Each structure stands twice: as structure tokens, then as C-alpha cells.
Image 1 (cartoon, rainbow, N blue to C red):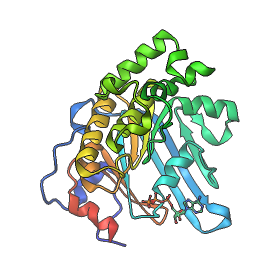
Image 2 (image 1 turned 45 degrees about the vertical axis):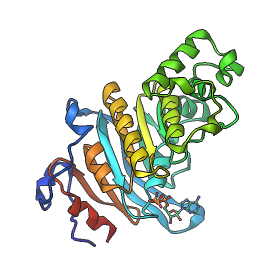
Image 3 (image 1 turned 90 degrees about the vertical axis):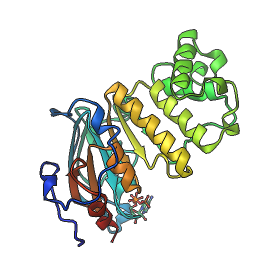
Image 4 (image 1 turned 135 degrees about the horizontal axis):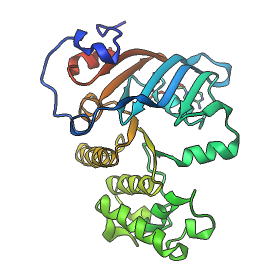
Length: 282
Ligand SMILES: Nc1ncnc2c1ncn2[C@@H]1O[C@H](COP(=O)(O)OP(=O)(O)OP(=O)(O)O)[C@@H](O)[C@H]1O
């Protein structure tokens, strides 16, 4: 156990005060989350891979609409497993996840696919299709609304889809790259395209698993800023994992720290200092 004590988001003032916070980008510029509208409700979530030890051990977490939550914790703490269980990209071993009002574990394949279509998921690696154009990759974000080859190739997509995709690319500052092959982009550009693709999805909520881990510090900062701006603009709920304490403080309303598959810390970022959060890595 570290110097960091278990605390709820409401009593962050119990934590030690210290160095000044970086200005909150996301938390500062928008209305307070609506506590009555819970978009993600995780209760007693457990996961063990292949009958091994518990990787998630009774995790419970409620995220209201419009809140941005940073999940932090050492390598192997269970952050990615938690995100993936929420979308049932991997099967939980126990507990319950309710996402946008749907009990995820009870959904059949078709309903699960429909639910996933409402969630933007940005991964550490952008997962673009390298041989296709940037525009086609973005258009693919609308696959739940557009079936057939038009969901894959920009020249077969509807005019409306192409225009919307161009708008998404403009929003991430890459309109002039629309017809370039995706495998000709830098890491930062690729991650921007991945974000444009999630915008094309018109998501109701966003998850991001170490979205800037593969980028250099400058590109990482730029992408996080852009991401935060878009989340704020659209009033979306966000849950993201990060190893950057400063990103957690700057881009989240709330920080949840995992250790060995359990929540060790759950605090509002307002009033918490970086030193308190660093304790989670001891
Ligand atoms: N597919 C898998 N099969 C078996 N064990 C796995 C699998 N995926 C993850 N694990 C194990 O589960 C534990 C938690 O992993 P997870 O990736 O969720 O942690 P994390 O907090 O996201 O770590 P990191 O910060 O390194 O990304 C680790 O011990 C890992 O080895």
C-alpha cells in the first residue's frame, strides 16, 4: 500500500496539497457532469484469463454523462482489461457492466455490435488500413450506418458520407491528406485520422487506451489537446488510460488508479496534486 489512500471523488480534499496543477483542459471548460445520468456502471467486475489469477478483482465504477475519467496504474494493473471488458471485447469472468443503459453481458452479438457502434474506441495503435486512402479509413467509421463496399472505399461511398468524412478530417487538421495512402502518414497523423474515424462514428461515448503512448512528447501533447477539444465540443463522456500523470490531471475530471486489479484511488482532479498520484507507481 502506498501513501495514497483510498478516496472517493467527493473527498479529494483529504489528499495532500502540493505543486500547482497544470490548467485543466477538459474539466475546466464545460458544464459539470450530470450525476443522475450514468453512462457507464461497472459493478463487481472480475476477470481472470484462462483460469489464471484475477486480473480484475471486484472493480466498481460509475461514470456520469459528460465526465472524463483517467485510468492510471502500473503495467499489468488491469487498465486495458477493464476497458476491454466494458465493451466485451474480452469476456468478463464475473460482475456487471451497464453501458449507455445496456447490460453488456446479456447482449446477443447483434445488439452488442449496435452498442459498440455508439462507442468511439481509440487504441494505442491506430489500426488504420494502410493500403487504403485516409478518406476511406475515415469513412469506415460509419460502417454501422453504411453497408457494402461504400463503407470501405471512398470512391464508392455516398456523397454525403464523403462530405462528412472530409469534415471530420478538417476537424483534425488533415483534410489535405484525404487521398494519401494511410501507410504514408506519421504516427501522430495516423492517430489523428483514427480520431477522425471515431468522429465519423458519431459516438455517444469515448474510450481510449493509451492513445498517445506510441507518439513523441510533442505529437502526444498535440493529439491529446485535439482529442480533449473534440470531447468538450461534443459533450462526450470519456474514459482513457494513461501513464502520464500530467495528462490525467490535465484532461480528466477524475482519476481512478488501479493496483493489482483493484481500485486503489478514485479522486476528482480538482484539488489533487501530481505527487499524490505518483504514489500509485511505488
Ligand atoms: N490475453 C491475455 N491473456 C493472458 N493474460 C493477459 C492477457 N491480456 C492481459 N493479460 C494479463 O492481465 C494483466 C493485466 O493486463 P492489462 O493489459 O489489463 O494491464 P494494463 O494496466 O493495461 O497494463 P499496461 O499499462 O502495461 O498496458 C497482466 O498481468 C497481463 O499479463
